[in-house]
Amino acid sequence: MERLQKVIAHAGIASRRKAEQLIQEGKVRVNDKVIKELGVKVSPNDKIEVEGIPVEREEPVYFVLYKPRGVISSVSDDKGRKVVTDFFPLIDERIYPVGRLDYDTSGLIIMTNDGEFANSLAHPKSQVDKVYIAKVKGIPSREAIRSLERGIKLEDGKTAPAKIKFISMERTKETAIFEVTIHEGRNRQVRRMFEAIGHPVMKLKRERYGFLTLQGLKSGEARELTPHEVKQLRVMATKPGK
Image 1 (cartoon, rainbow, N blue to C red):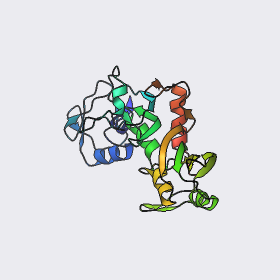
Image 2: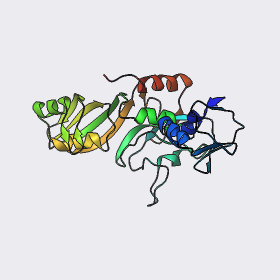
Image 3: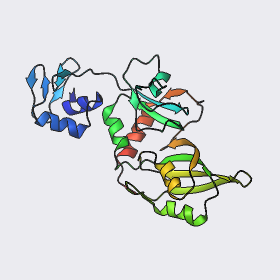
Image 4: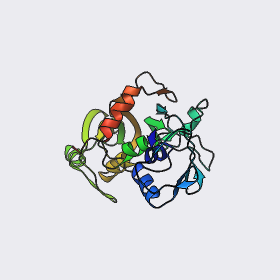
């Protein structure tokens, strides 16, 4: 038996908080009966409907994918481009990405059908570190890099402090490579940060998400997360801010 709001969240319909709101608003039925009280527990045999739509329950699954460049972080694309779910042809569950990586960005992305898990990781309060390798145009000054480390003003507000580690530079080609650690998940954030200091990103790869790495994976390959890894990620997502 599981709490009704948890089942709704796991089905990917809404976050647990939103599921609680839907219940209180009388928009959820269990076995054709409207439920308005929180804390009601349901069994796998119970018929659940949210706003008249049946809830299909699946066993939660969790994967890490090495997303190649030129792939959309979505379950479908109206332009017919390759999407992340194309790399899971044998998976019956309706999985989707946690957060997103840009079309031109490669690297680690988590895939799941667990809505509550996905929402907790993607929530603005989540403090899970995301580590990127960025190749940028030009050689940024130390002061420019320090401005990124302190937090830089973008059109959607100032970024949280970032960790920037110099990796290498090619003076002849006028390029530099940095390791960038952030915990926010704003759209195109790393690219916009470097654009703001006048050094556009030429190539970007996410190498780490929390403790997860791409070790053992080639571009386009995926592996299932272990139960312990899922548990660790849950704990990390709910830790208070740094």
